[in-house]
Image (cartoon, rainbow, N blue to C red; front, side, top):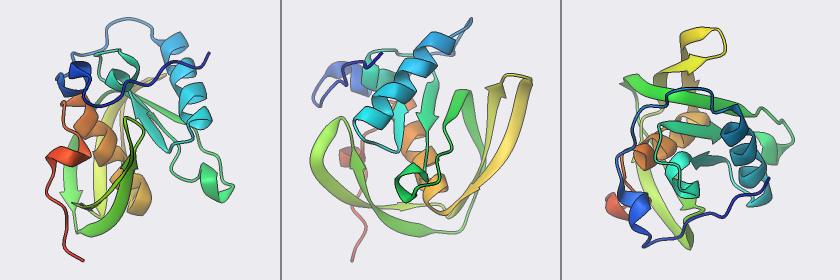
Length: 148
């Protein structure tokens, strides 16, 4: 089911999310459907009104390499390097921003088989950081714009 995406300045977008408790499979499925329909590369719980620490992501589907992912109770445990990308946000349409992010991040999260950890680089690392910001109530307009 496609969910409505909250738009700035909705106050839910600035809420620090609480941990997920229980099975949120239906929410995750709906979030993926919503992300693809938008069309975006990631979508966090608060963007659809769920103030829980969950986000979905597919950093490569627009290049023809679909890899839908669900991250529950994520936490960045390491950051390395630097990169600058122009980012958009489904909750702030048509307001791209140049944002500096780590080139690599290690993310711990709850998966189907328990807690696990994975390293993301490049665009996927930027997507992870963008969605993690949403879980902490931070929008791209809250971050300093990187110089050209």
